[in-house]
Image (cartoon, rainbow, N blue to C red):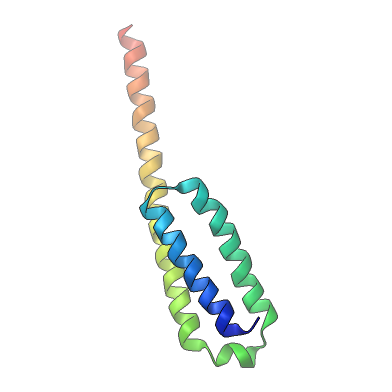
Length: 98
């Protein structure tokens, strides 16, 4: 598979990951995130530096997209963690009233 096809697949998968986050499908996001990581590793391992150098602009765009996904996933993780803690506090309050 040539590098252009690999990059196109990575951008499509990045879009899918973004949609999964938007739709709060966190388990599917986790699974696709692992696949995404594997495909990035394969891209870097299977292409020479010279080939990668021809796609610097697209690689930078992919790097920015990955950073944005990472920020968004961390934000969602923190929000879920806080929600879980709040639910636990509420559960403890209900037990205390009983």
